[in-house]
Image (cartoon, rainbow, N blue to C red):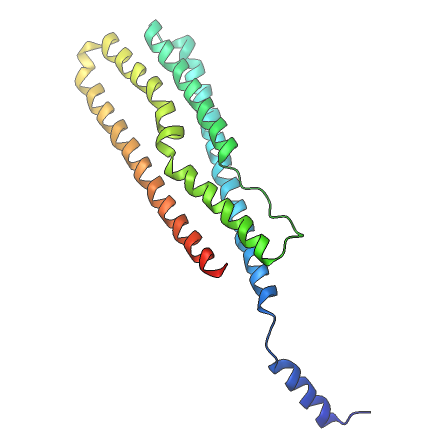
Length: 190
């Protein structure tokens, strides 16, 4: 039987030994992957809800607006929203990190998911802004033709919509750059 002093020495020796950093790193990668999955799911849910509301509003407008051009514009906005939601679902989801992956495989999986999100944000002009543009333009032209006396107001609205689109584009490019920095840090650890 060991003496109490020997037990404390053994405990101290055990506590001083180097920790297995691969377990800590794997847990950290798993947590980062779960956080990414959660953030992406929340973003997608917000976009799906916004698209459903927009489809309801534009669907109502397709029947309520007075001119055929305005109705076509509302229909194009619905089609644009469907394209956006489809592309977001197809390229913007983040699958769950499989539980049986080791450290290197988990790092690789997480890096690939970050690259998908980066590419999604980099290409927001093509899959997010451009599909919405035809419907908005047709609606604006339709309003100008239907109410020529409000032309200056519609031009101001058009400028505001354009600036909003530029803002969305810039924010997506910044998000892509931020994700690229995360990818670069992960590559340093591979």
